[in-house]
Amino acid sequence: MSTSLRDTLVRERYLLRFDWAMQDFPKHKTVVRELRTELTAAASEVGMRQAVADLGHPRVLADGYLNELGRPVPRWTTGAVWGGLAVGAVVYLVMAYTFGTLDTLEQLGGGTIEREFLGATAVFTSAEGGISAGTTLTWQALVFYALVFTVPFLLGARVWRVRSRLADARNPRRTAPTTTAA
Amino acid sequence: MDEPRDPQLLKGVLPMLVLALLTERESYGYELVTRLHEAGLDDLGAGTLYPVLNRLERDGQISSRLVASSAGPARKYYLPTDTGAEQLWSTARAWQQLAVTVDGLLARATSKEPS
Image 1 (cartoon, rainbow over the protein chains, first blue to last red):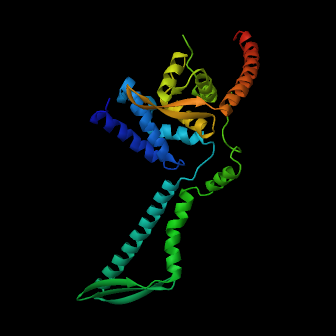
Image 2 (image 1 turned 135 degrees about the horizontal axis):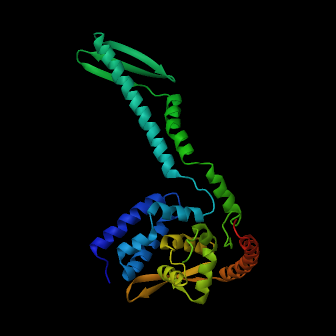
Image 3 (image 1 turned 60 degrees about the vertical axis):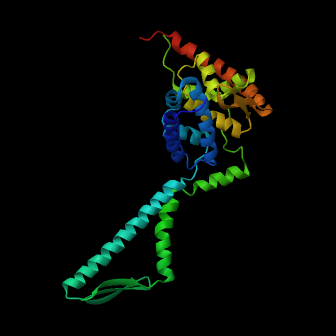
């Protein structure tokens, strides 16, 4: 029995949301693939809508899988979002500073000014022919821009959780949940 | 009328119940949900069971194999491993001991009429 286009869309929409919520789960693609098989099998008995409804909200289902790991896992996706936002904020500030400086120069009748930041020289020019801005690069400035992404990324990812993962690798039964009666 | 069940109560015993059902006969995921419903856990959702199956398989307590089906796609059937069988035995004993303790405590508490 083949799955109809409508059922496929319902299934894949659910799995897409589940996949996103499971990104921090080790080998989550395998889980998503298995869930697709289960969903298709269940749908042949109760219909796709009911099969999907029985799974509950994809975020809650993903939390169920993460809870069953019995240990916190790093959240690399969240870290990447934090890092991206920090980079975006710095880019916005640099652009705002650059355009503000060029506007001021234009209001003053044109000219050139230089500013230093961590050894890098930024040159802003406003003249009859147009405006320009440029900067040199130093290793200090490169480190700064790298840290702008790296620090929020590591904090957002809760990188310290890698330690519990490494400890589990050395002693797999240390935190693995057991089948307990209560 | 049955009292509404606290999901946390079920969560603790679900791995043991899954192992017990699979000891009777191998099953695929949705069939297990149906069997648990028939056993009285009619409020159990498939979304509660699948993470448990995943963990039991990861821990080596159950194994799986794909079986072709004439009524749809291939199904993943689960069966307890030797480790799972040992785990079921020890968990069942722990559960029985706990049940005796809990029953005793509850009998004392509920024997008094609320004033």
